[in-house]
Length: 166
Image (tube, one colour):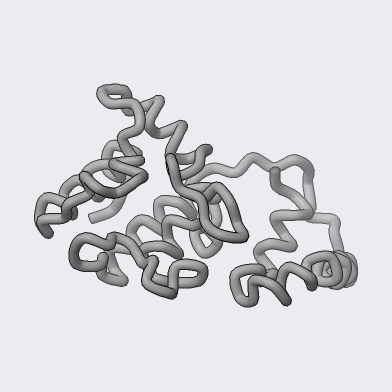
């Protein structure tokens, strides 16, 4: 099932919970995809631009739900896959079966489809410029990589985003 809009995303979570008997009543974040009951647009805005309510990770702090256009670095995808920092018993959901890789990919595809407005035209940036900027960014994040490991990796996609996206 392709997720075409936020109502589909809400159904994605609600249907999975119902089909698998998940008990999220005790989860500190609750049904965070429905933060404003009865108002899909307000819930969408909080889901796309906000943090997981009432959740803070040691050494990280509040947890942004997703990064528009970048599912690989979105915390919701990391939590569902069990990728760091959710690899030590923090994989979601905790109260029932895990989402299948295909189901997670559906959500990842929707996140990747979210529009990320360009700040400027980066078509004139040369490969050499990108390599120089990457070297600069790698030096800047080295202390974080030492502390957080793979969680603080820098990808080519991050460099392109740094150059031309908000």
